[in-house]
Length: 412
Ligand SMILES: C[S@@+](CC[C@H](N)C(=O)[O-])C[C@H]1O[C@@H](n2cnc3c(N)ncnc32)[C@H](O)[C@@H]1O
Image (cartoon, rainbow, N blue to C red; front, side, top):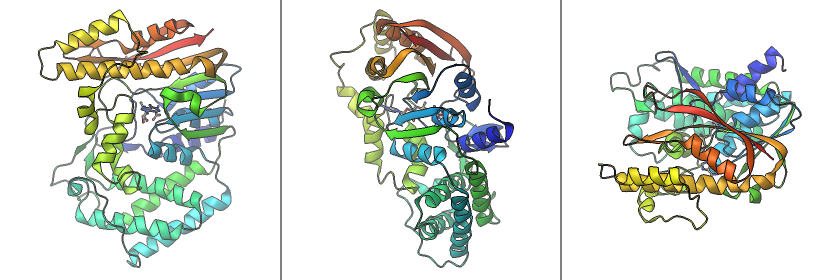
C-alpha cells in the first residue's frame, strides 16, 4: 500500500491533463476511456500478488504504467500515437529537486518574456477553424507563451517537458472547448473569452504549480514507455509480463487523433489534416478523414478471426436500413481483425499464470449490439487462455444496453 501523500502525487500526475469542469461536474479532455479510472487500475494492480512486470499495450495517457510505478512495480507500455508517448514519458519520469527548482525559474522567465512581449510569437498552429477554439487574445497569449517556453527551457529537456505539460492544461483551459457532452463541443460566442478577461499568465503559473506538485515525488518502481504497434508487440518487447491491464480502443468510431488534435498541433506532433487522417488509419478503431475512405477498399486479412457471432453481427450491420451500413460493417470487421492480431501477439510475451484485464465497452450499430467483451473472451479462449470472465463494471451512458466490462483471463 502506498501512503496518502504519495497517492495524492500519483493522482496529480494521473490528472496532468484532466480538467475538472465545475459547471458540468465532469472530467473533460484526455480521459480517453470513461471507465478507466486511476481507482480501477489501482484496485487491479494491488489485487494481484507476486507481480513485478505490468504491461499496458494501449498506453493512452499512461495511467497503468504510472500506477504500476508508484506501487513499486515495472510498468511497461506502448501506443501508436507519438504525442501520447511523449506525454506518458513526461508523466512517469523521475524529477530531481534541482529540476523542480529549474522549472519554477523557467516558468518565471517565460512569463516575464510574455509580459514584456520580448519574444517573437510562434505562428498559430494550422488547426482548422482555429478561431472557434481560441479568441484572438487567448491565441496571442498562447503563441507568445509557446515561444517563451522554448527559450526559457532551451537547455533542459525535463524542464521543457514539465512546462509543456502545463501548457497543455492552459491551452485547453483558455479555449472555447466545452465538456458537457461525451465528446468535445464549443461554448457559444457570448461565453467565449468571458472566462479569462484577467490574468492569463496567472493561470499558466497555477498549471505549472499543479504539474510540479505531482513531479515532486517520484515513482519507486520503473516505467518504460515505447512507441509501437500492439498488433506487432513482439517487435516492441521481448520480456515476459506477469500482468496486463489495459483499455483498448472500443469499436465505437472514437478518433483519438480528433480528440487530441489541439495538443498535437501546438506541440508540433501534427502539421496538417492529411497526417492526422494517416495516423488515425494506423490506429485500431480509427475512422477519421482518410481512414473512412480507406475502409471502403479494405479487405479481411488472411489470418482473421472467423467466428459465427462476429460474422452474424457484421452481416446484420451491413444489411441495416442505412446508407452507411456496409461501411460500418467493414469498420467492425477491421476492428476485430486488428484486435485478433493484437491478441495473437500475447502468448509469447506472458509468464505462465499471467493475468489479463481488458477494460472495454460493447457497441451498438443501428440497433445491432456488438458484444466486444464476448468476442474478446472467444478470441482468448481460442488462443488457450483459461479462467475467462466478462465482469460488468458500469453502464456507459443513458443507453441501457451499453456497458463496460473487465474481460479477465489467465495464461495457462
Ligand atoms: C482507450 S485508449 C487508452 C486509454 C488509457 N487507458 C488511458 O489511461 O488514457 C486506447 C489507446 O490505444 C491506442 N492505439 C490504437 N491503436 C493502437 C495500436 N495499433 N497500437 C498501440 N496503441 C494503439 C490509441 O492511440 C489510444 O491511446
